[in-house]
Image 1 (cartoon, rainbow, N blue to C red):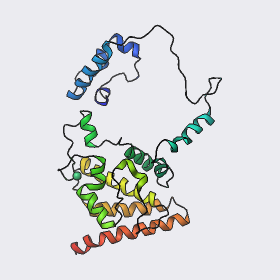
Image 2 (image 1 turned 60 degrees about the horizontal axis):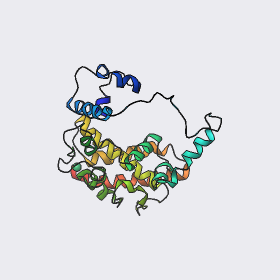
Image 3 (image 1 turned 90 degrees about the vertical axis):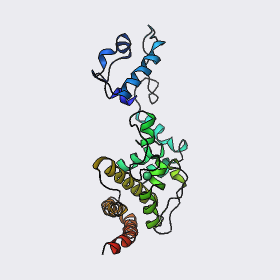
Length: 253
Ligand SMILES: [Zn+2]
């Protein structure tokens, strides 16, 4: 209930205190979405009662002596590859950590796409801000929207996947070295997302040329993070973006 939570005056209130009286917990005026959440919450709490028993708290990654164990936590983190096919694509990748985290949310469909926001009553419309035609799902924004489609056509690197939850199905395109191709795709998705946010939050016009230029600049920045052999891959990426920019540059001249 993010809409309601954003109106909460005491985010760390206990459940007991909350149950006794929760009217004083909120901003004096709630938005329509927050009011709906509050009504929903009241319904959920109607039949809920706390027991008088002592709370019992435990960690999954604790030792038998009830102390925190780094090795158990490390084991849990490293066991993740078996539970998600995208794990390796996202985390065994030379992209900056913030971009890996973004890609993880993307693969889990946890980005604030307008379709997801509408479901939560945060926005009234789910229509894509770039093309103003289709609902903004992750697949639409990153694969099929007008700017994304032009981007993939110009770079000849269409990921050819049915869903953004299937990043692991992306194959190395012929136009770049297969080494670091996953990093290349994370860069492209990251910049498509940043381009979308420029349109939504900065009122910039959708523009494939601006997106390609940003990808080219980002390739240069990322090259400093990579070792010598991996760095040569970013030269190929820059060439792809430069070639893709040529039609728009010749049209401008
Ligand atoms: Zn669109």
